[in-house]
Image (cartoon, rainbow, N blue to C red; front, side):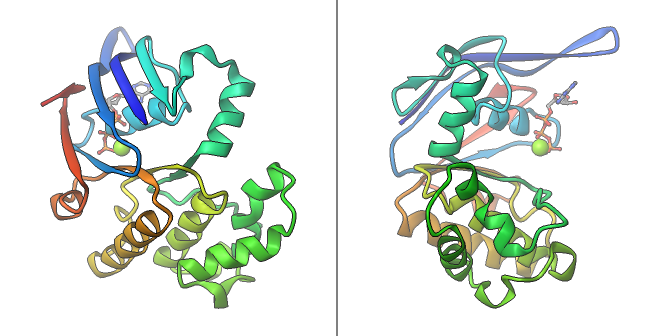
Length: 218
Ligand SMILES: Nc1ncnc2c1ncn2[C@@H]1O[C@H](COP(=O)(O)OP(=O)(O)OP(=O)(O)O)[C@@H](O)[C@H]1O
Ligand SMILES: [Mg+2]
């Protein structure tokens, strides 16, 4: 389902170059979950952005569901992302002026999906937040905002879910609940998931784990 071959990504910081992802290769089978662990600054978010097609590698190849990302132009890539992938960020990335249900229905509206509000409400119900549908993000707790973000990432029923430290901004107890919601949904919808975390307990719930340090897999 996901094949990563020898990808490399460099950034220029002033006069020096940082190799954030250095010749990384791995594969994930359909329906499996993979954890990416590693210290701060090791290249986890960069790697996830490349996989999700939010950024392009300098070299190497990423193939997802038999589609090689480098062969797609920006528009095709954005469409591919919208129909195949869901992304959950550490900072939630909700639109502050939109209610929970309006945030969740955004990906559906982009596709012009019929019955968007009903589908978005169902997705909110799946994460246990049906009652807060008409609240704005600033009226919700951090854990609730992350549930909204998970509902938004999964509302189009993507085959693949990328999550970058989904519980990193939450207290331990809330973080645990969010992980349960996430893993519950992934199992129920048979999604393939790549989860970035530095929580080894959370990582151990995945089918497999890879460790990145200084941009290199260990
Ligand atoms: N846009 C950018 N421009 C320049 N350098 C960058 C950029 N993005 C990331 N880097 C550098 O690449 C390296 C990897 O960063 P990355 O954000 O992938 O780490 P991370 O493993 O996600 O860290 P954390 O656990 O703190 O989120 C770091 O040295 C970082 O400073
Ligand atoms: Mg990061």
